[in-house]
Length: 316
Image (tube, rainbow, N blue to C red; front, side):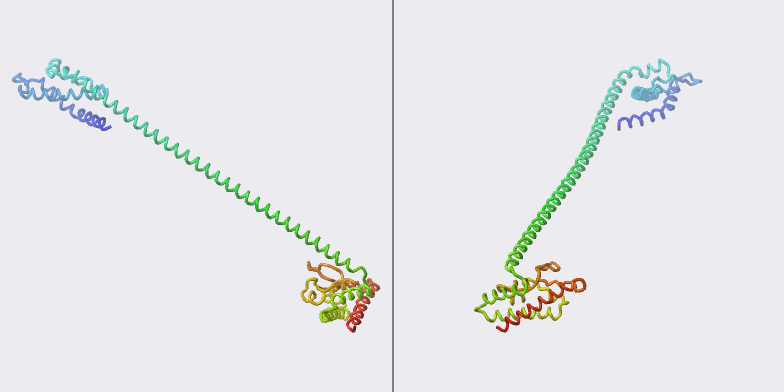
């Protein structure tokens, strides 16, 4: 590029100097109209010819380098003789060789430049392709990572749902076993009361008295608590809380429930085994007096009779 730039500058300089060189050429062949002698002396003519010869050599070289017809011909103002005297033609061959060598160097330089430019573009293209490929790979990795994370999340959710389902199943099975155990316990408890009503109450009181034969204090507490319980119901049969006894109530278990015949007395007196608000209880259900007066009367008479039996037992 630098060589070409310098040649361009040289070409412009030659074009600028051509008018002056043409003037030198004309004066070199002109003669004084009076003396009929050349305008330049011998020494000056030699110097002028040398300058013209150098210029023509440069002009010819630039013409060959640029293949420019504007520089291709020698100045017509010069005769063949003067052209010969300037020895322009003799220097043409050497100049052509020099220019050819220069042109070859320029061509080689251009080829190297084009090669480097091609290599640079190829490198840039390869780099762009590498970056694009890495971008695609990165995006694929991101997509794959997201897929793996989503798959992991779904698997964790599946395992969690499975565990929840298994826990629910175990809880349901445990609840079912507990319910069956409770039903079995209730069944066994009910089997201990083959007879209900006043006669059944007396049978269960006898069982309690026999089991507490050596613990009169515990028997008195049990009888007293039973008496209080039935006395409250007889006094206020409409009060539901008096007719509902939690089966696991600490006070009930301490005074009555832990003794043989204690729970059975309630069942013999008409209490049922029910769950009230989810709590296992002994419950004496009051018949509707408006719709079942006979049933209500029998229910209430049974409570009163049980209270009388308890009074008799307490006197013994």
